[in-house]
Structures are given as C-alpha cells and as structure tokens.
Image: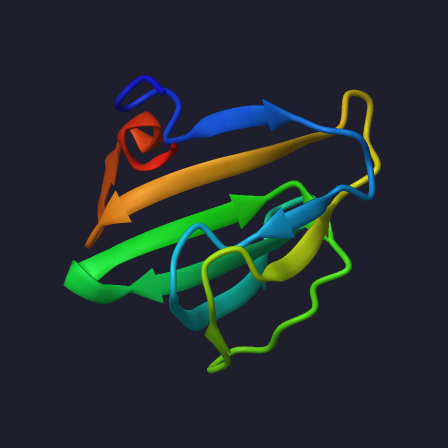
Length: 101
C-alpha cells in the first residue's frame, strides 16, 4: 500500500483459491476493470468498504448480505495469480494491513 500509488495490497494465491469476505456486510457493487476483470465491493458498518479484484467465479450478487469468512469469489487464473485487496473509509483508501489479522 502506497497512498496515491497503490490503493491496496496484492495477496499471492493459487488460481481457484477461495476469496472470503473480510467482515460482515452487503455487496455494494460488482463491476469490471478496463481489462474486463471483475471487481467486487462490500459495504460494512462505519462507512467502510472492502474491494476485491483479480477474481472470478463470483458467488454473490449486488445487495446480498455476506458474513465474515464467507466465500464470495475465487482468485482468477493469471501469471502470477493474486488477489488485489483494498480497504476504503468512504472514498478514502487506507492501508488494509490494519484490518487483517
């Protein structure tokens, strides 16, 4: 994470690895980046958002309630395969490491 340069972290994982919700929340958006790779956004309490990219096999829909640890997608096949994970307080990107345990 580097504010203004990289708004999240890349987590190395094998393609097909389950991507799990970081906390309880509601699926706020499912969109795609310029390369048509899915991006999933979950809204949590306290105006907190988590953003998941580098994914496919999404198992939830916009508006669904998710629980912490629930599988929401899989890591997309790529070279290298990784999950891009962001945490936002409203529209402001923050270092996600403080939210991971």
